[in-house]
Image (tube, rainbow, N blue to C red; front, side, top):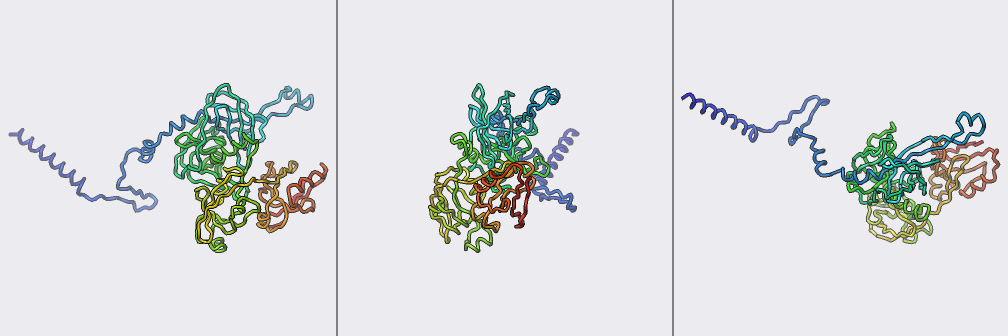
Length: 473
């Protein structure tokens, strides 16, 4: 009798538990408790499951980063930049230095092997001014490297090593096809830590970090961690294809804070091909000056669209003029690629050569037209004033009008660290020793007539529109 009672009791208890559990699971409404303190509020979604990081789990199941890393890590090299001290000039210095030239490392970065016979693409700032370059592969083999050529404004350089075997290399991918939100890997040597791989996404495209420096930048922005030493390294997609050369970070500390930038692979490949085939960069231009689309320009040119760039001037004898492009035309696409800002246009055109034909979609008077344009060669007059540390360029009339002057030459680059401190790039030099200047050729003639001990006075217009003078002794 007792056994039967206990059996019935156990059955009753189990039935009660089952009933209560069923009610809790299916009948009782779900509630979410939110703290009243806004500083400690913890919002819990109804579909939250307290297990492993769900986002990380989803990514891990969808993407295998190891394959891309394995394909690329052996093709990214460590580039060391050496300066060799001069030979001793007197007997005392000879004994103090033991009569031996000293080789001192002054910088380091990364590079990407792009061919099995040893061509390597890197940043110009990684190799600029080096007395000697040394490249270390991932297997610790070391080679001396030769500079083939560079494009300083694009911050791309091509170097080469002679290895005794075919090398691992990374094939170029199509950076135009890369999409915002796409996963990428940054491969390089930050802080001399060789063969480092970090992951992130493409945060943005066609970034211009300084619209006033006259460098036609069009960077890929990524949140993959990039630090000092990553310069010249690879930005690759999950297929292991090269879509960018890691170049810069934006940081107040000098270290990575979430913003990194890479030269698109299409631009880098075009520069590399030019350097190998021609020995210098062949730059094609459309032949237009551009204004952004904003409330002022839309009203001025009577444009209703909000996307694109406006043609504010067309250069004579340019491909754009011959194709019939006019002032006030709105450029919306080039070769099917949407153009939303100047960096979109300049970045794409910079990947093309003179005589290439591009299809330009414009809107004129509310009607869309597509016109073929043959790019013309970028002919520019430049002169490097080595004694002062400046590079000057003959500007076009539109640039002079922007500064409110009708003559002058533009400072296109500062060549020394002391001159870089003054942030002179883009400013207009109007006179040298009281002589009005109009071209780089004229400036060159003036400096060739100067004696070594003569002072030089340069007059320029600063960013406030005021005239300033610099005296160089």
